[in-house]
Amino acid sequence: MNNLQVVIDAGHGGSDSGAVSSSGVREKDLTLMISQYMYEEFQKRGVPVTLIRNTDETISPTERVQRILAAYGDNPNVVIISNHINAAGSGIQGAEGAEVIYALRNDDTLASNILTALGNAGQTMRKVYQRRYPSDTSKDYYFIHRNTGSQTQPVIVEYGFIDNPEDLARIQANYKEYVDAVVDAVIATANGQTIPSGQGGNYYTVKSGDSLWSIANKYNTTVNELKSLNNLSSNILQVGQILVLPSSSSDEDSGNTYTVKSGDSLWSIANKYNTTVSELKSLNNLSSDALQIGQILNIPSNSVSAGNTYTVKSGDSLWSIANKYNTTVSNLKSLNNLSSDVLQIGQVLNVPSNSVSMGNTYTVKSGDSLWNIANRYGISVAELKSLNNLSGDVLQIGQVLNVPSSNNVYIVKSGDSLWSIANRYGTSVSELKSLNNLSSNSLTIGQELILP
Image 1: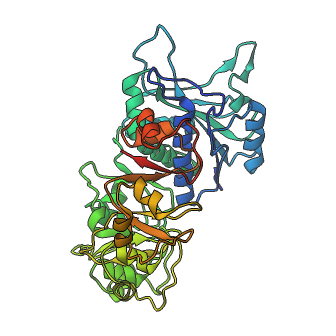
Image 2: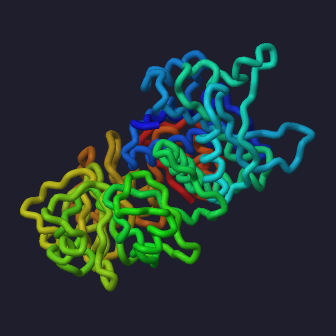
């Protein structure tokens, strides 16, 4: 497969909850959580990707197929990943592990790579298989295989068993590692590679900006050892290429490489790691100051981050950020080489190394007052005004206020449910509802929830 394009199908949704565990965990919530993270990971790798559902909506099989084929059409470069959680059913106990089901029109290369990668990520491997329609064995049993064209490569990935508490706990704790494994496997297959089995995850997927030198340095090995282990005759690498690592390799990323983020510059990175722009350019063989998001830079092995960073959010100002980190606007501007007070959402700012966040922030909404915000966070109006250096009671919509850190706040995102949020933060749905005075399980995007 060249020119890889990926369609992600979050199984079930809306009125179709899928399988449900004895503790009330629903398959549709897990598959959406898995699929949303998978979508982000393919985007990071630069792979064209479409997510069939991004909310808890009911989709008929016909509509699901229509959305899949509308994404990139029916061609052999299209991989369809339908994410599911298995259920053994009553009378069967102890079933565990991952399965991958592939279409009759395809070979097992992609499915086998995915299952091997999941095994390397720590999940029990069950089997790779096809399933035929009982009344017509020339057809696939599952519509996601049967009706999605004649050239696409659809796979159903069952990550484990929702009715096995131990398997369910593994999925909930490790789903990001499992998704990373699936993404690696899809890209490796597109590049004509086979995921090495029995490596325990001891391999590396090449990313934009990587070189054999940077990977060898990151994993405490040598270029020659990497080339020998991977039967390479040159130093040329391809994004998505799978490299086997020596079994004794350990990731030294915390000290030797840095991944470029939005708002970064060579100056800000050099300042962060107590080095110079010229040294960074020399170490990374750069001829200009231009950087790309996701680019991996080598930094001197003895460098230590000289400070912390903060990513600008909607409603932020230099004053609110300086106040949050107990510093001054002039100090922030100097540290970040800023000539004006204008900020961009997503911009990364260096903050002084001895700075400590003074708490959380709250963005003022229509209908807010100092009294209801203070009451929400368990402080007085006077304390809230003092914390934000306010002389009056007037607030503006979009204004960012510092609030005490004693209560954590979560902002609801697309696809969230009370169950997924409670599970993420180690609490219960009933406790969340009680703490936030909720009478139903309905949430709205952007809604703020107080956490225990």
